[in-house]
Length: 461
Image (tube, rainbow, N blue to C red; front, side, top):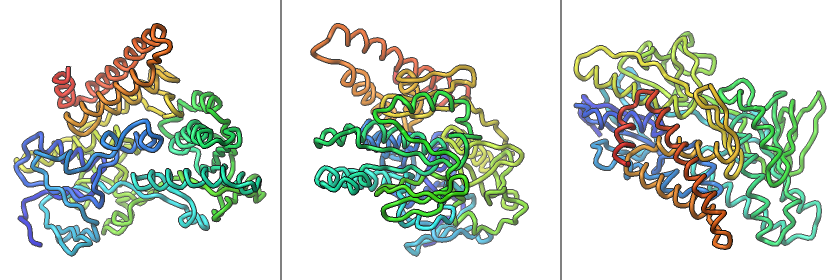
């Protein structure tokens, strides 16, 4: 399939890719834009836990690209990228179609890394996409159903034990979420919730060590103890093998085994295979094999190609692989693409890190805001969701998802018809916290210099 040469192709519909496309549409970019992703839906990864445990709906967390891009002029192609030819300026797809480009945006993100651990890819469950969330939901429900039906104590113990491998932010968020809602699920079936076991297996001495969430470790450790069932943490434990019904790990030079039918893998990511295959020399890659880009987000050897998010590293600037970084990089890439199309020089733009947000179970979180103060518990939960909801991709989607959240989270969740007076007061307080969350989010966006989002919030009001 031959397409016009003067067009921009974006491969990958994550935060960087989608927001690049939306910003180009907003900036009235003079060239056609094609966004390619293998999935039908965008996945708002920070809120995937809320989708998984039922706190939020699919339209809020995994909306269709066709809906998000409606009226934008961006062409969405659902297909798998097979190869990228940087020399011929061509992207080839699994369907046999191909697209020539004048500019390319690499936004493929990263992939789950199993670190060559025996059986991990075959038997451990990842948590990265909507499909992963659905698969894990079905698996856990199946385990609980079998557990309630069996009289074999040892078999029931395996079915009710969940091992989360990896004590980074993803592992901590997963363990906390499971420790809150699995007991409720099992109790609803008539089981004894005390039989649920959630085990967090961490390679290092400390959880969430050495990343952007590091300042929240103390809060996280305290909040993890408050879950519906106690989370068992095993540190300095290196997973060595995953089997159908067990996990092996090395602890102080001794090999141990945990009997379980559910192993969830959150132990890291690796560079996307397509990115690894690009003809970029080793000296122009970082230690994770990601290509280096300039401060204007362009590849060193191919300046017509931009890259951002998890699949690239900015020269002399270490940035965490988070949504707020990818969001800002998407805006920067869009501005520089427009500059090039108009014959202007691309400009660098500083990425501002304004704290971090960590989910710690149902209606619970920790927040480090502006690197100045910390919040824990339900107020942090409201701030976290309010913040992320303001980052939803389009104004209509943002408004719909936010009003749905306010209705469910504030009024339905907290109003009890048997104790209306007291609950009304609590609801008012929580509405205030929710508003604070959105105001904090707006402050974040203002400090990030995102005028588009500010205009959107003003229209909503």
